[in-house]
Image 1 (spheres, rainbow, N blue to C red):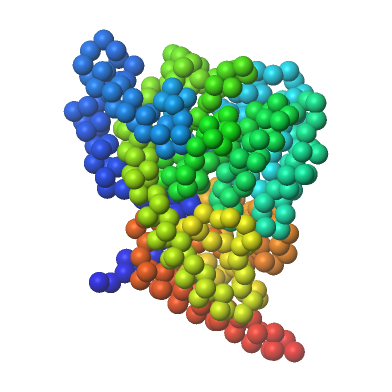
Image 2 (cartoon, rainbow, N blue to C red):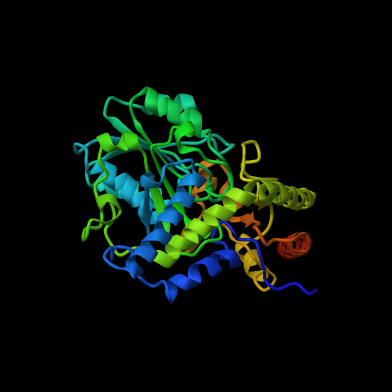
Length: 393
């Protein structure tokens, strides 16, 4: 059977909707079209029932209770609701700690909070991509109220020691928020055992639809209320007003249910696929894995290749492979990866680094095809650069 081109290796940017998820959603566009807030007739009850079931599944995926889940339009809104919502309930000048390698959704929100009077510390990371817990504890001041650390990085797949970080936060009386957009559905998460107070997640990273996400708000947060960022109707326990996206919520719930059932087997298969991919490409002289000395998500890798033109290579591969140089949000502006710079990579390596992420429907045949294409292009680009260098001499 011939391959469908280009081969998709950018599952950290988004995933295809699982056919089982689509089938679950379809009735809610047609015969089950009711508004979940219409609690006076059967159409509304039917929609509300679908939302309730989805809320249970999303909660179960992260070890939460259904009433701790607030549905949003995606992880970016969930991040904004968590960070802005907490800060606005505090005295101006409160101190927030986050990490230099966070997603732009967190970094840009923190910069906005700085304009509102917040004091924000951006922690550096070690060359592995992990934070230094000693440095974190030193950054805590009497005015620190919130710690925000991403569960798993969207570019390097590095997994932070969340339980240790949460324990340190609680030791000093801080709230702990984590952007788990890349981790949810891929590795086991238990918000209560992990000590997480707030958690953001999105459906489209785990084979659900785009435009739907969730914020977990734990009981401890009730002492510091999350101030709504959207007003008008008091939906979602008055934290997020707006007519619920019932088909999207149902899809997210089904995606969460599938992830719970298949996560372990899927991770094992994808780890083998990713490891083979890395092993073959590391045979190329001057190649390296970024974040290799830290725990990582099983399906993704970030690799650098010396002596190439990264921009030319990714465009040359465009008809054969779909992968990226950084996060999808950063690639919109063509900015160099702030994540890789924080790891200490040189400017050349930052520009010559690529994120490859496999998924539920990735195959060995696709991985082999990708290995061959990348190996050939790296060799061709180096040959071209060397020929040009010798011509100059």
